[in-house]
Image 1 (tube, rainbow, N blue to C red):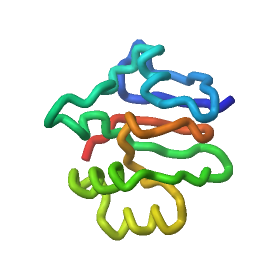
Image 2 (image 1 turned 180 degrees about the horizontal axis):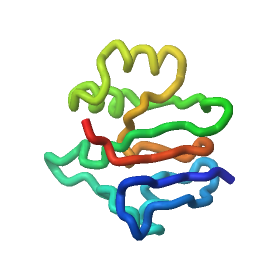
Image 3 (image 1 turned 30 degrees about the vertical axis):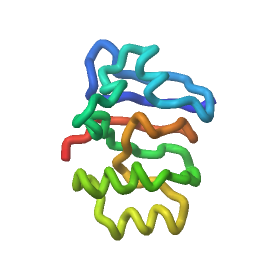
Image 4 (image 1 turned 180 degrees about the vertical axis):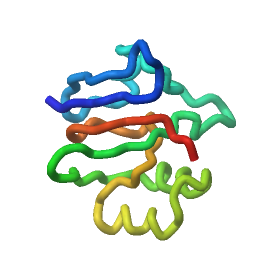
Length: 114
């Protein structure tokens, strides 16, 4: 089990939640009524951007699909150099598309402010 902290989404639902390793973040958010965009509509891809901070002692490896990295670069959330670094070392950037993210360990998740 991992600890997932949602912060600055909604005062009533923000908090610490237990999640299984490998569980999609959006599934957990939907169950707990955390206001993250759950489904991308045409033209709205990127509406589920979140800031992620791993709070475990060791940052987990994270293989990311090219789609997500390309979308993060396109949205200006990360640079092409950062995307390349993430691919090279199988780590995730500090900004993610929640719809593409799985629980890998203890994590703090906040809305992306740009």
